[in-house]
Length: 438
Image (cartoon, rainbow, N blue to C red; front, side, top):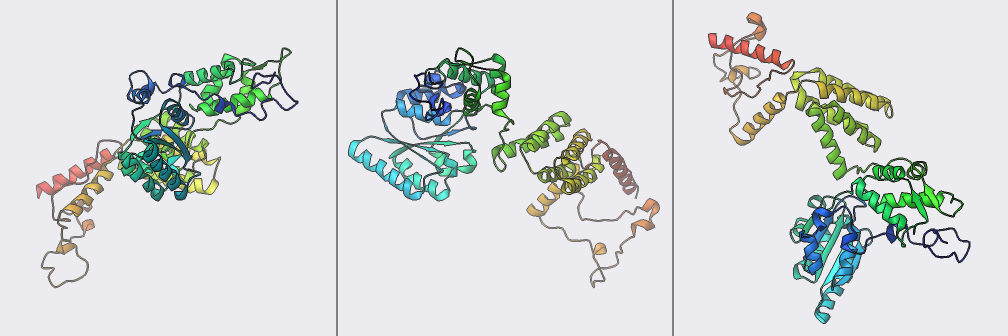
């Protein structure tokens, strides 16, 4: 018997050779078999009702790899009475798009039937390619189904977004992945009962595949193909075979898009929120995925001033030193330095007073009248400086002189009681008390 078709072998060709990949063979054919997207496909949900009634407008399916975007589009193709065309943002150029779109327009005029156009990886289209779609979507010549792993609000034109309903698909949870794998083991279109796997093996595979059903099925197929059968001809997979088929865990992380920005955001917010454990976890994720350690170091320098500031001035010194050290020693040793500065900053007292001060001052300069420099603070002799003289602060008692430095009483810098900033706050209060005495 052939391991992947359940049919007698016609030749000595290797089992599975010439067949479609397991992930392709296991694509659900009906809505009820799509797992993990109950928030948009369970009974009574808008998208399910629209598909079953065959009454929907253009939609964009947004979600991580392997969550079922293409599968859902193909299920729609099988359930609709409309003409179905498909292309990809990787393959189609403007000329190919125009040919498809003009064909759809002609078909509607001749047959009165709408065309559903499925575009996989639609985010790869540039602005001009996306603009080509607009008049055909607007006129109803096509109903667009776009699939993308990228945030459509950033990577798809606003006019196209406004003419479409956006549905976000979620990465499959581990239970859903295990169900996908169990179905593949027993289905006649899958492994047809000729392969078994321990619960531990399936749980491990579900854990390391990051919610990507396609990746989990590919790993299962590799494990089945490369494991010697038992005496009865069946293949049994343990956690060992699964670990070998997966090798290094692939973290879902893109270096210039959503996952990149979401992860660095979680990292910064964890340091700001004084959670060193969470901060180190997100740091480790970025380093594991191959993020540039200098990028992380630069963000820590910004954070040291923005979120810690004068509550612990040593934070900025340490962050700058870390940047220099990372650049000097490189990975993998730089991870140690980054961990040190991350945990230090996470545990440091926090203050954004300096950050808020410059923002408020900039706002006043931008929105109000620019204040003149007081004459006694101006540089060099000027005819209109008058009799007011600049007083050298070091000549005063305690190196302090009460004079006007800006023609406003507005307070920009309000130090907190956190860390060293509490010392600064008390010092300012003392200076203010001296001013009041005079």
